[in-house]
Amino acid sequence: MDTAEIMNGTMVIHGPEAFDSGDVARAVERLHPSRIIVSGIMGRTAAEESGIPCEFITVPPSLVLRHLPNTERPYLLNHAKSSESARVFGSIVAGRTGRGLIQVEGTDGTVIAWDGADRTYAGELAARMEYGAEAASSSPPDAAGPTRTIRGCIPGEPVFVNGIIIGTATAPSAVIGVRAGEIIAIDGITLKPHGVEKLMRQGLPDLAAAWCKSGGVRNAGPVATGRCSNRGIITVIDHAGCDLYEHIGEETCGVLAIGDDTTAVCGHICAHRGIPVFGVTDGDADGIISPSYCTGSVVVHVISGRDDDLGREIAAGIPDGHHIWDEWVQDVIDRFEGQVRVVRDLRCA
Figure 1 (cartoon, rainbow, N blue to C red):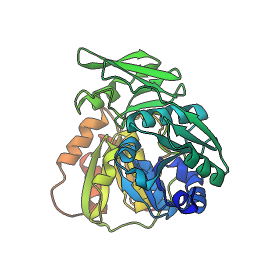
Figure 2: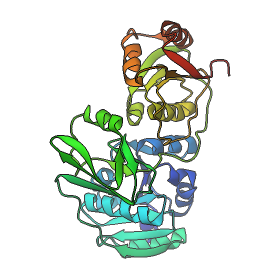
Figure 3: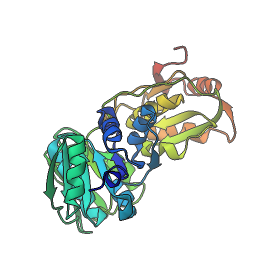
Figure 4: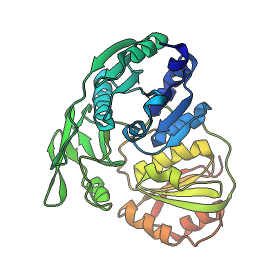
């Protein structure tokens, strides 16, 4: 195969671990992709921290790959938590892509040619990366029916559906279903009622098409930068940290994050952007990411009740327009004295 063909492919990257582990830097050096696309939220954060020029697309990698022409010679770069989960993930993406997929998997140093993908091309990529090579066939995608199996779980880790934690895995496969218009646990999962409630606010999901995963969202800590302007627009993120990038921009001076895990995710991403966070929590965190916050951030714990209710009350009191962040934060703490307890205060850091 011509060297130029190998070195002009499109690399689609999934997740932050591919960056944090050094896989992306290694692939850029050895494969010289002509185009790099990052799929996912925390992957974008890690990409921005790396300084490697990338395009960012928020849809799942299967959708990105499905719409790339074969002339771009696309391949998926991933770094899973285990060899098993790597192949579970690859099988799902390959099945949904609907054509041959080449997966460059960093967790065990393997290039996998799925569903009749070009094995010669996969072998060349493997040789340049000094990885092994293998071929595999994906499982048929889950039918649009009453159940969904989330494979590759580690017992004790959180299970996500469409970015919301709905429970905790109790077995390597978590099976959920729908009964009478409600999400139910069938096997291998203990549901978190409040999480299911949050998911259902968006409407009953199509389990066959839903984005499902298990485990944390990133192991490495963020690379913090200097704080942004103290004056600007306050963005509200209510139990949907995965939507953050759609709502922050140059005019953002701070983020009101509602929910424990949402606060942690927003704090992690915003630490790199220099955006402070005011987090409203009630103690039901699932530990999906190590919390980190930039200067100016405050996290409060609701003394009684749920973070949902108080967080929305605070959000409803934010007038349109620009605000001075530090003044707004102090005003909120004063107005809700006796209802919240400050557990982290970085205004004087």
